[in-house]
Image (cartoon, rainbow, N blue to C red):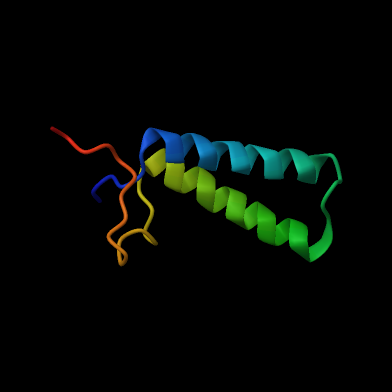
Length: 68
């Protein structure tokens, strides 16, 4: 797997995942929506740890900085 997530993208994904988790544990979100958002938070966390997003592949997107 070639890295296609840059540092800014990684930070944003981790922050969104943390916000969703905090909202869930403070009971700000509940029901089906909470489970969908928790799944999304899990996906964001895993993709940021792997530095790879499979959805970027078909579109040729990469947020990594270009090497000179």
